[in-house]
Amino acid sequence: KIYYKMLWPAFIWLAVIAISGCKEKNNNATPGGDCGYTITIADGTNTVVTYTNNCANNNIGQSDDELMMVFSSPDTKYALAVTVSGAQEGEHTIKNVPPYDKGSANLFLTSDQSKIPGALSFAQGKLTITLFKNQVADGTITATSVSAVNNKTYTLTGEFKNMPVKSK
Image (cartoon, rainbow, N blue to C red; front, side):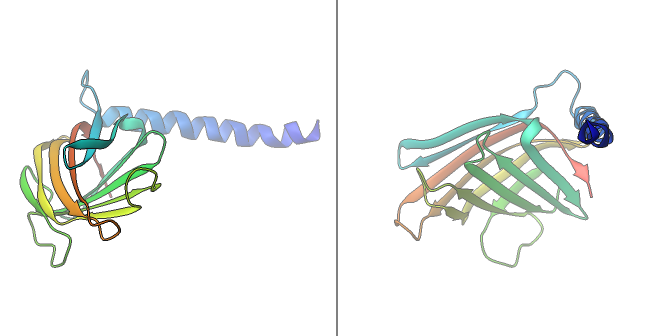
């Protein structure tokens, strides 16, 4: 009995945090719009991995003139980290070596290694931000990477829509 009395404040605190966190995310999304992303990775013409997720498991933040995004699979086997220099609408060139000038994007994918190598750094392609206003971002990604592990070329395509962006 004494443990229950001690835990009630913790349960109430967690409930308040969960409810306020959900409200914050929903307030940033476009009203009535679907919010989420789809990522597909292919090895040649064969689709190896594809995942779709909603805004509940995303992380997008903006600081100064940089946009940082993490698109994770629902099962957390895959996580695509994206950094865009010059956070604005338009086309951004993907590169994996510095300097990361304004208008460039850096993509790094980690995985559980069940279907693709554990880490892929994408060297070529483009990320297009088609909408970036009112703390919401839409866009597309097309990129390629040659794995140092198995020397295969992987192509990543993706789309994100109505993703809430939080200023940091």
